[in-house]
Image (cartoon, rainbow, N blue to C red; front, top):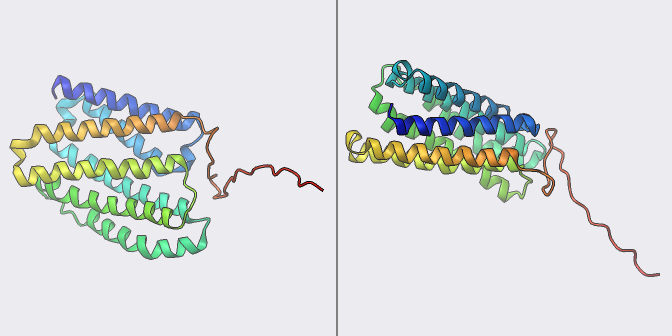
Length: 236
């Protein structure tokens, strides 16, 4: 691990820790439990690689941690869809028709990756396919939310848009590696991916700590807080 890679890893770990603490301090962890688990997994993987690079900055550990991240991201996509639509039965029924097949396809893709697959195939083929499926899941959730004009919690919005944007960068970097050669673009793709992820977790940290005073929110029970305006009494 180079000094630059270690610096970025430390910055990412600080940002993720800020997100985690912000969710706890602002009492927002319950808004998406699987997202909190994801942050814990990122912290664990990042710490192991940073402090023990000779043991964990390896290809086998990369494959392991990315597999864990993929499973948790699927859980995040499913939980977000449930939390967004559960208070609206009509929208929920239609969301199931769209999202359930997508979730099933991506799940099959995750569990069908051969255990003996080569590292380069994981990086340039299987992971991009899985991440593309997650992008479709998150994007479909966002589109259905807009279509039915449903209230969306600011943290949920940050997770949906943030993951979708970052995963596009991740998939693009992997496609570049597959098209132009791993050895030729490895350094560029790595920088592209790490800086995009640092920007993502920094935005999440900002969102986790930002005050909710000026915003409407959706509670954990799915009830909607609707701002009301006082009407001036009519003249007699």
